[in-house]
Length: 160
Ligand code: PNS
Image (cartoon, rainbow, N blue to C red; front, side, top):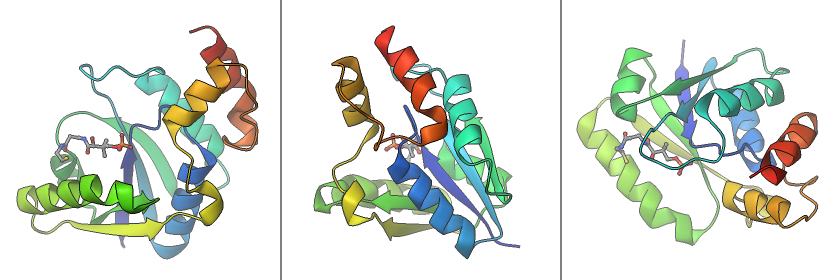
């Protein structure tokens, strides 16, 4: 059984994240969506909120489980017997950061692979930061986030 991890901050989940998770769910037996629970990093949504939004947005994918993690991703992956980390790659600008993370994780856990899925062209520009900025300034994010969590995200971001 091949288990892989889709890791990230997911602050909040976007349609780009769901596209990568959905495509990975067709390639592997089990996907663990791992939400970074980092007390030191300032996130807009709490880890519990981010997990709940992801659970709602992936509820149609039976082989996807959502959880939060703290500490090193390489250790979390070993604990879960995961063979790889799956990350979405949007543009060349993502590459340096992703390459550094992949090499660090490989050093920390030599059994662990990192697999990159290229984003769909329509999601190339999309990020959680863009979603937050547009929503907070009153813009339309309906094509940026999954429909089932849109209202919740809007309500929460407009309170910020
Ligand atoms: O979606 P993001 O915010 O780019 O995801 C980054 C994430 C959560 C994958 C990365 O920060 C991470 O794995 N953090 C856990 C700490 C860790 O393992 N650091 C060493 C490898 S960079």
